[in-house]
Amino acid sequence: MECKNCQTSLQEDDNFCSNCGAKVIRNRLTLKNVLNDFSEQFLNYDNRFLRTYINLFTKPGEVIGGYLRGTRKKYVNVISYFAIALTFSGLQIFLLNKFFPEVLDLSAVTAEGTEEFSKRNLDFINEYQSIVMMFYVPLYAFLAKLVFLKKKTFNYTELLVIFTYILSQISITTSVLTIIAAFFGISLGVLVFIFMLLQILYSAYCLKHLYGLSMEGIILRTLLFLLILSIFFIVITIAIAIIVRYTVGLEEFINVKKPNEVSYIISSAMNWTS
Image (tube, rainbow, N blue to C red; front, side, top):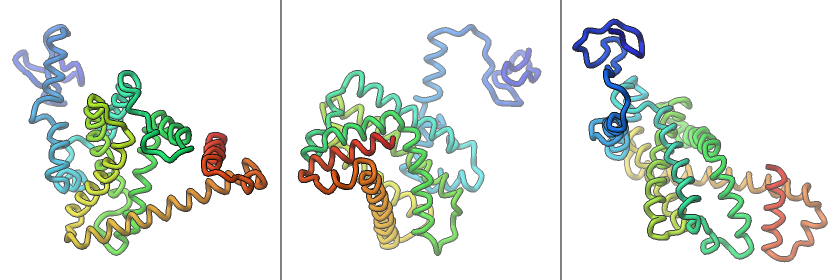
């Protein structure tokens, strides 16, 4: 008898391959077998996914720091965890669009005249969520490198790993919470502000453990991080304004009198550039 995964010779009474560790399958595939495998992989407390998810809240320094130090078997590796997060996000978007489209209405939390602009932004994020997540990881890693410039604890690549774990954890958590909230008719627009606060606090919590900072130290660096991030988005906003100017024409831009007209022009310019 041979292992179906690596073709290593096995004994008749072996339950696992001595070479690759794969479970020996002797029976044909049935629904019961599939459910048992799913239970072992995702519902068992000792499985790596649940252990990784729980310990990223209780012991983030052990999970992320351990991976950076070379511990790669105890927890889900960073790439696989990111893939799981994208799966949760995709499932969340599918369920919301299919069964709870009303919670995607942002009119209650957007300024008058900007509803269409906000809707287009949400549609863009939903459609290109994986690209958006991959964009934020290097951005946050770069900003963290600036904030912790005097601390050489982690290089840029290690910061990429750190923020991939952090954003994946936030994505998985918010996906589940969003679906639960949808059952109670809570709008996504209301949850966005709560999730932003959750991301800030959780990121600070993880970095505090990884860098071994005091409470005062992490608060100051979090504020500095947010300041630099705000400046970055201000620069992006100015860049968009410049695109608007040369897209719709200077005269039309100057003659705009109403805020909702400004929103419409900016929205049109962003659609044109995308």
